[in-house]
Length: 318
Image: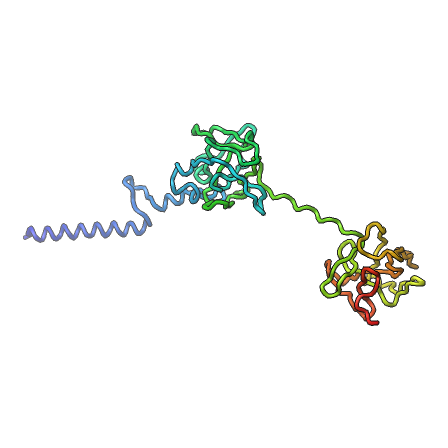
């Protein structure tokens, strides 16, 4: 005979079993079920745009939702980046970007949907040019949703979701198509370094150990050979010696700085090579010096020494 009490216990046990089964089902799906049976939670993560497509939808402009994404740029400014040169920013210091897949003539934005979540469009309203830049370069383009987006030099402007602090440039070159904007709307780029001034054919360098030494146009140390003679002018370095100690080619007097010009003549060697001389002594460089400033030839064999601005041997025994 089934009693009321036993029926109640059976119903309770069935309820516990159903709850337990439901819990096991959640473990397998790593989420929870929505009312229509579709999994949510992790499924939404899979729908996020990949970094190599748009960047990321987290970071700048996301904490406050759509209103943050449309934050006014206000008074623009220009920052000076060592890597990127002059970069235009909004009034909070956040970098503005341009997209290679947009067009400037006519202005058109091709960043919509998930792209626009990762790269919030900069509203055109209330924007004024950075100090020292041209206000006429600013304009606007109407987006697909009817909003007005700021343009500079015709290029639509964006911020980047992963720029979380003023001055960040995490969007630079994302996907090879996003670039920080210069004040004229072009891609920001550091100026090429100025070319180094050409050195005179022969000049003087101050060496930490040897003092003032003569160097050639490459900055390589110039040497004299004790076995040479100045009068009559003669070189004792011939054949294989010249491979190790190349001659200094003739230099015009006007292409020198800080050196003695007395006896500054060209030596016509018996092998037909023309060689510069200083105070009538033939001069050379050393193949063992691989970079400017090297003095590896100093004192070699007790016969090779760097040359002073007056044409004398430096450090040679008397």
